[in-house]
Structures are given as structure tokens and as C-alpha cells.
Amino acid sequence: MTETVEHAVTPPPVSDVDPFSHENLENPDPLHRGLREAGPVVFLPRYEVHAFARYEQVHAALVDWQHFESGSGAGLANFRDEKPWRAPSLLLEADPPLHDAPRRALRDILAPPTLRRLRATWADLAEALVDQVLSCGAEFDALPALAEAFPLRAFPDAVGLGPDGRENLLPYGNMAFNAFGPRNDLVAADAHRAADLSAWVGAQCQREALAPDGFGADIWAAADRGDLTHAQAPLVVRSLLTAGVDTTVHGLAACLYAFATHPVEWQRLRERPALARVAFDEAVRWQSPVQTFFRTATTDVSIAGSIIPEGTKILMFLGSANRDPDRWDDPDRFDLTRDPSGHVGFGMGLHQCVGQHVARLEAEALLTALVRRVESFELLGTPRRHLNNTLRAWASLPVRVHPVR
Ligand code: OVM
Image (cartoon, rainbow, N blue to C red):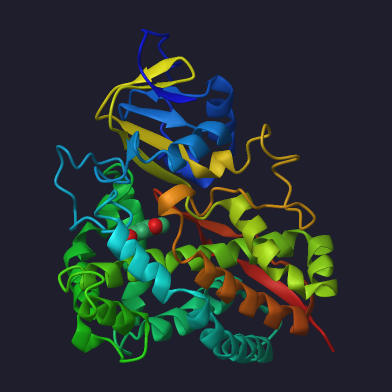
């Protein structure tokens, strides 16, 4: 399927769409359908990138790091000729062999023994949060009250962040995920805060700023053992703070939106709470909180008869692959009876989300607590999207809940 070019081939279809326009960010479904139908690869002259919107090509690109590198940036900016806005991530924006030591260190830190230790703590935290929210009334905005509140209580403590400045986490993540896209109005809107937010995050990555018993301290301890260098440690902590907050917030928000609009699926979960993890993965497939990532062709690559020139960017539509009718039955349906495994919402291949088990544990804790206390719930008004160049995010998710009595 992916091969080095040997013979000249046909040019791909061209499309003048802007995937980062407000209209397409607000509702990407028509864009995705159009690109999937246009062909396996579509050239977007506006950004001079080749786009993959079908599952087959997105999956193939994700697992083929030899032809599709990350070291030139996982966003639109090509680090071969553009200076990155911050030091490149040692995980997301690196290739083997550089990528491997930080990846292994973080994988080992986020391994099952760590998650087993967190499980009871997070279950208690979720129960306390749900009790607190429900005691304040049956109508509330589930975005701040649950989807933001839970990860913001659970995750920074697990990393070992200090108490001050945690309100910077979501704005920093929002800025970082916007930065993967073009320098549009969404990037400009946060430009005045970029230096302050980056300085705060940078300071939290230092050993002195981190509690002795969290993921952050574990990363520094891995450096002491020589598993990575001491210069790498703060950047690996930074990856946790960049990739670990907004993503889970909007993954949980996707679950809440899904269940508020699919009461039959909520009843299914209430009958079988063990489906919580499947529900989370199905919500991640269905909404794809991370919509897009880029790669760079390391050589002229032939995809389904078209040449992608060496050194140019490839735009992978994860959200579109996750709804490709050639891969999924009734893809637009949120359905707890399907097997969502194989979705590319966490990526695939060697960069596949190293924190996905942490995210699933957070989701399991919150959904399990909700299942115990909530008979049913529904939208109370129209939810609002928060536009971001990379994230399929929410600004507000007003709900009414009917508590279990
Ligand atoms: C990182 C990073 C940042 C954003 C996203 C991500 C989803 C990773 O800094 O390593 O993966």
C-alpha cells in the first residue's frame, strides 16, 4: 500500500477546502465526507499538504513512521524550515531512535502498577465530585462541573503539581493544540498569553516544583537511573501537562454528550457498568477529541497511485477515519454494542497515546460514579462547541439529571 515511488503516477484530486475554518471546525462531518469521497489522498493547495481522510490511509500512515516522520513536527509547521514555537516534544515530535528512551520511560511510569494505585483514589474522588454536583441541583453545565472538574482534580495531583496556577493548564493545552494548525485567528487569540503560560508550564516541569510521589518525580527518578537524560526529564513532564488535560476533558465531555443524547445507551451502561471503558472508547471514536495530526514524508511516497513528495506534510484526519463507512458499520451512531477497538482517536503505531490507560481509568471512575447516582439525563438547551485547530472541544454542555432515589 505504501511504497517508494518507482513509476510516475496520477496527480491526486485537489480541494480548496479549509479544514481550519470556523465552519469546518464547528461541524467537520461534511468536510470529512467530501474528502473521503474525493479519494484516498487529496491535495489541499491552501496549506500545500496532502490529506488522508479514509481509515485505510490514516491507519497506514500512523503505523509507517519510516515513510511518515514526526520529527519535522506533528502540526502544519515543517520544522525543516520553520522554527517550532517551543522546543519540540521528545515524544510526539521525535522519531526513533531519539523518541524511544523517553517513550519507554513514560510507558513504564504509566504502567498497570501505577494505575492500580490510583484506582481507588480516583473512584472516591469521582463519587465525591458527583455527590457534590448533584447536591447543588439537577441542572448544571456538565462541561465545567464534571468534564473539567474531574480531570483537574485527579490528574495534576497524580503528576505531583503544586497547588498554584493550575488554572493555567487548560489555557496552555488549548494554545498547544491550536499551534498544530495554521497561524489563524485561533492562534492569534492566545498570542498575548503564550509567553506567560509557557513560563508557568516550564517552571512546573522542574524537579523542585514536583511532589516526591507523582508521575513527575517518577520521570526525574528515571533520569537518575540513566533511562533518559536530566535535560530530557522536564520535557517529558511537559508532555504530560500538554497532552494529558484538555484531551481527557473533551473525551469525558464526549461521553457526557453521547449519553445525554442517547438515553438507551445510558440504560445499557446502567445495566452493565463494566461497559464504562468500552463507552469511553466509543465516545473517543465517535467524537475524536484529537481530530488531526500531521506527518512529513521522508521520501517520495506513492499512495494509491499518487506521489507525495519528500519533505512535504501529510494531514491525517483521525476524526474522519473514525467515521469511515468502509471501516465502521453505521459510523455516525454512538453504539455501546459495537467493538470500537481499532479506532485511531488515540493514534496507532509507535506514537499511540502513552496515557490512554490513564484516560480510561479517569473515564471509568467518573462514569461508574454517575451510573450509581443518575437514573437518566438530558440536554438542557443547546451545547456549545469551543473551537480549536486540533481539538473537537466543548464550551458548554448544559444538562438536567434525574437522580437515582
Ligand atoms: C507532547 C504532546 C502534546 C500534544 C499532544 C500530544 C496527543 C503530545 O507534548 O508530547 O499527543
